[in-house]
Length: 291
Image (cartoon, rainbow, N blue to C red; front, side):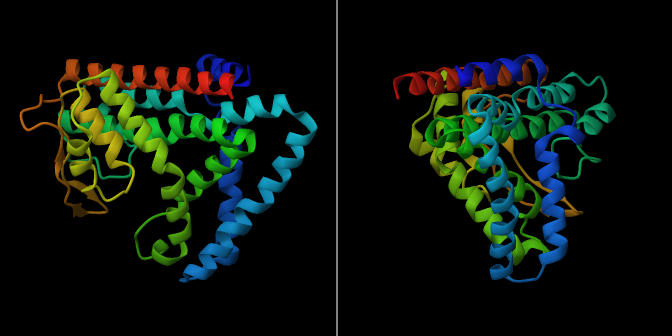
């Protein structure tokens, strides 16, 4: 019942405004810890990561002991980003002009968008959708089923710190190493579950074919749902990305003769992800009932 109520809240209400969202509060706390602890050291990064997570986790554990199932419902609801994810991606796909599409895309990607063509904005939005289908929906459901409310809370904090510190740049190369690695571990299984579900609801290919392309991605996890969506929707994702004025060279993902991402292809890809997440929810519910 906890899972059902949490998904109903997500469907009806979506995320609270940013300033009231617990993830935003945690982000502000993480900024304080970073200012106090920062150093170009992996050891310091590990200690900062532990302090940043341990204190809120202890407080939330006490709240769970007091409020029980009510805490569990709110913990899962606030850890899922289903509605806001599709809202931001849909804004890119619905844009009438390339300028509108670029502006909408700025909300969901870190790459430079000012030179992107209309099809490129759709590609970038769908790549973000594929990756975040795992990070924002499947992974929270997975860790809720495996470890309960505190498991999903822990996952959301891990994922948030990765988004803040887990960059391979001059500032975070050492300090953010722990944040990136722990997130990689926690998303390993959910990313592959997401990819398998996408291939199940869309066009399918052998897992070895998907893996061959997914392992060329810079992330050990993000490549799996991105490549899976490319094959499942018969579109081409990937390609070079510009970040901070520098070109990040990446291969294309999907079948050799896949479709261009026009408006129709983009909407079909969107439907693949929606169906994937619906199935993920039913599976999570089924596992929760059985165990």
